Image (cartoon, rainbow, N blue to C red; front, side, top):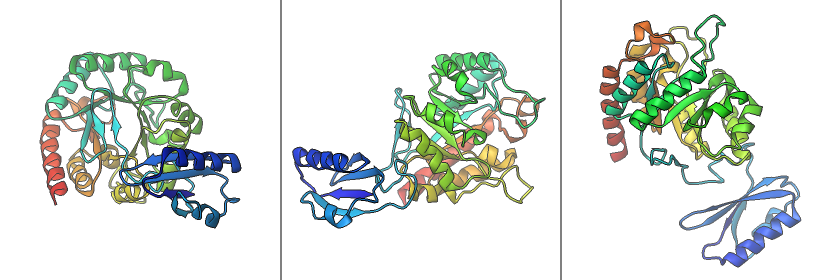
Length: 337
C-alpha cells in the first residue's frame, strides 16, 4: 500500500500518523521524502487496512494498493531514480553512462594492471575482473581465486579504479573486503541465502539476470537484498536463453526501459555475455546507450586469442577506446533530445 501525504505537514503530524499505522497494523513503513511530497510505503499484511479510513486522515492526500510482490525495488514506493555512489565519487545511475571494463578472468599482475591502465585512459570508471569463475565444465579454468583478488587490489592501488568482481559463495565474503562492487552472476541470481547475506553488507551489489529468468524474478531477487537493509543494488541485463543459436544468448534490450518503468534501481547492460561474439559487442553497446541504460560492463583483454576465459567475447583495449568514444557521444546526444 502507498500513502501520499499532503504537502507542508509538520514532522509531529507525520510521526504520529506513522506510529498509529505501525501500532494498529502488522506493517512496516518506509518513508520517501521528495521535493514536493512525502510517500509512505506499507510493507506487510495490509488486508485489514481500510483504504477509505486512511484516505480520510487529515495528513493523507491519496492512498492506493500495490499488487506487485516486490516493494522496496518498486518505483511506486520510490518515485525518483536511485543513484549508487561510491566513496570515490563514481556513480551508477543519475543520468550518466558508467563504463565497467576489464578481462573476464584475472591471469597475472602484468595483465590486469596493464588492462586497468588502458581502460581507465579510455574513460572506464570501474575495473571488472573475475577471480572466482563459474564455468559450465569442471575442467575449464576456474580463476585464480584469492590470488586473483589480490591482483585486482593491486590494480586498484595503481589506478584508483574501483573493483567489480563476482562472488560464488558466502564462504568467500571475508576475501571481498577490498572489493567495491560485489557481482552476483546469472547462476546465483536465485541463491537466496547468498542474497540475504549480501543484504547485510554496506556496499553495492551488481545483480545479473539469470539466463532463463523473468524480469519480475530479477526484481524479486533484488528484493531479497534490499529487504535485509542494503538498498545499493544495480541490476544487469546480460542476455537470456532463447531458441536462437547464432549468439551465446539473446540480449533482451527491451528489459532496460521495462525495468526502469517498474523499478527505481539503476540498470546496466552486459553486451559481452549477451552475444558471446566480439564483433557484436559494439552494436549491442550502442543500442543499450541509446535506450537509456545507466552503464555498460564490457570484457576487455590485451590478447583475446590467448585468454584463459571467454576470449571470443572480449575486445582489445584499442577497440574499447573507440567503443567508449562512440557510446559516450551517443549517450550525450540522446540526453540532449
